[in-house]
Length: 94
Image (cartoon, rainbow, N blue to C red; front, top):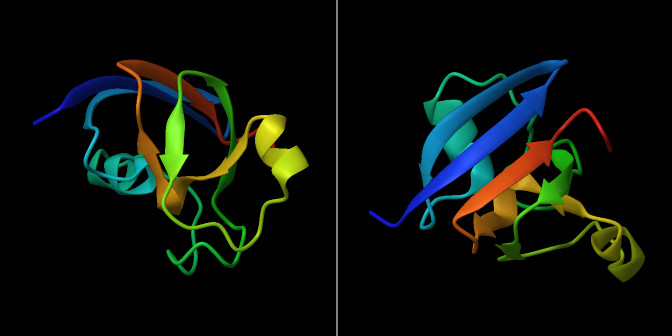
């Protein structure tokens, strides 16, 4: 496992978990009982948007975010794979 420290902020609560760089941020959240929003898991509905406050990710697919939104730190968690050793994702700030 390619381990990573991930801090999620959802509904005002922060949770830090150990994640895997080979799993999406949404899958990691759900596996750790974090109530992250989602609907389609296909990168098209925008329900799982969050703002990456620190760290880096790679989006496997993106049907919804503009280049400007991505530059501003927005990501879709169902398609985001971590590429740094630590990250902070604020799902409340979208």
